[in-house]
Length: 112
Length: 113
Image (cartoon, rainbow over all chains, first blue to last red; front, side):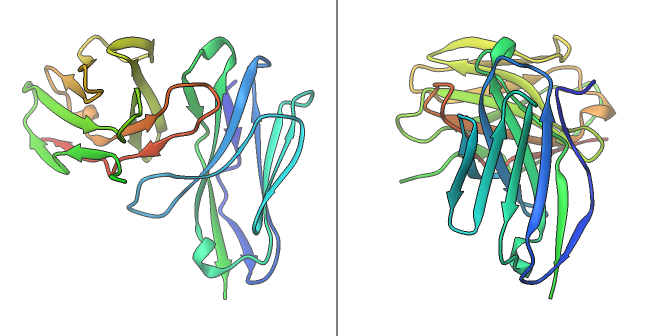
């Protein structure tokens, strides 16, 4: 079992729709959870972080965490073509210490 | 505020050679992590340095090594290069506590021929 799992996609949504990206992790002791966005040919960029159960909203982005289910998600409301990228889920803490483990990423396409 | 600086941006090396990559983190950040990114394997953790000490290490062979200097700049070295080492090597800077995410550099694209 991979430490951090994501559907590779691609996930295709129409412009203006809600994109839902999901991630599961295996280490129950994990403490910090992140979402990064990576455009083709660019480096990953941190867009959201979440540390406690529940929802965290930042503009059009909402991160959701459920530690009991070991599940993290990212919702993108009013999706725009500029949101088309690969989204990486990352988990830090637990038995990995300060090491951050990344999922393989989900490719998102937003159709105009 | 300057970002994370990685040099060089591109490298072409021959099998068997060695290579050194450099990373200057954001001013004030004490943690530098290195990742290898390939299309098939995604982002794979190499190692993390905090205040000149290696705090975590990934599952890479001993040919991969690194160090951090007192000014937090870090270098990674790969000896006896293999074709499979061709990848994008990313440096990630953070303050060093568990609650902070990373700021990545632009990466070094290494091609081994």
